[in-house]
Amino acid sequence: MPGRSDARSRAIAGPVISLLLFALSGAVAFAPALASGTAKRARFEPPNGQVYLGVSTHLITTGVDAWDRAAGVKTHPALYGRWTTPDGPFQPILDEVATRAGITPIVHWNLPMDGGQITDGSRDAYIRTQVAAVKAYRKPVFVRLDWEMNAYWYTHWNLPAVTATQFIASWRHVVKLFAKLTNVAFVWAPNVGEPSNEPMQRWYPGDDFVDWVGLDAYPQSEPASSLLGGRDNMNVFAQFAAAHHKPLMLAEWAPNLPHPDTPEPMNLVFNWAAHYPRTVKALVYFDFVVGKRDFRLTSHPIGAAVFRKRTADHSHYLLSLDVAAPSTTTSTPPRSRGAPASPTHLIGVQSYTSVPLSWRPSSNATSYAVQRDGITVGSSNTTKYDDTGLANGVQHTWTVTARSPGGTSAPSAPFTITPGRWGTHDHPCTYGPNHKPCRYPSEGPAPQP
Image 1 (cartoon, rainbow, N blue to C red):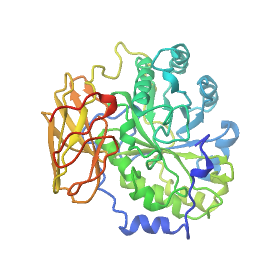
Image 2: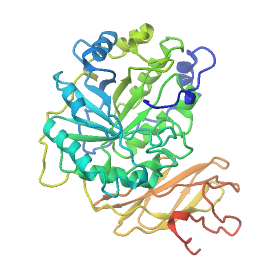
Image 3: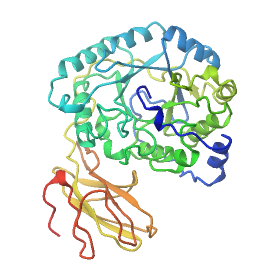
Image 4: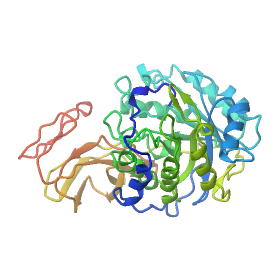
């Protein structure tokens, strides 16, 4: 949120009570909560059905105490978030959190990525200084690096200065420098919706480089129809995180004045979280005043009462991490390296109720997973997959990831098409009755049909 333009916030017409009524009416259908199966818990992930409570606010000596009182928290929240300045140090945040036993820091890291300054290694000395700070801290640290990368208001890591491909390369470069630490968890946190008209999964660095999936969504800055049923909505994020076996953190959320102080925004968030008990594992409240918008819990007595009621069960809503402080070093990097490269030249053919897909092979890949609209829908041991049973006239976006014993690749460039009729494609392509493949300029010549 810091630095975001006020112009992007859209007011909700009519009483805010429509938020909850819409969410529960069936006008927005929740998909079934996805289980994470028997997958090993992610770093610092609590057990299923438990959620960390957190807050990002001003100085811990004043902001957290005021929030604690409004939230009915007698000790402190489990998580406390602070933003660095651009290229700023972690140490002041870690020092501040160290004054309150039991709180775990979330470092919202403002790291400019434009101009290739991360991947060319010119910022490595600065990054290694932050690695050393986290190592010396010895206790768990969440790092939310360059949040809302799918937006347009952060000029140093959004389009047009930084493309999805450049962002992924920069993110991976940073994570590799932290690879020997076991007391750090990286949180990848896009914004709800598609602010830059690109699907959020296009910016995903890959399972081996992300510990938690994050999400920024404000229940009074968007209509419920967008939050729960629009492009890249809150349900899509929960399903995406579950499909990738990642816990989900709602990393920024809060109602805001001058919108009315009512129960509905709080209930929308808690109802959504309760629907995904195996996936939604942290709620981090944004407790600030930004311009004319007041997000502070103390300014929302009605909302705060709902918050206290919904979080009264501290066996479900946790005020401390569920894990013991880990060792800060390991003999081998905790994340697998050697994952295959992302598949390229993903194309499809418009057919009635189906879309046959194909792509170029990835070196060392043993299988491929196919995602439709961010959800894995199938797998293939070849470079072809026929996605069937689709509704004609409904547009979908596909990506493919490559798998191997060394890990899973980042998603391919997306392919968008509408089954059952000729449509449009986001990228320049030659497409028509002869089914000629689309060409992505960054991928070189088109494959031969």
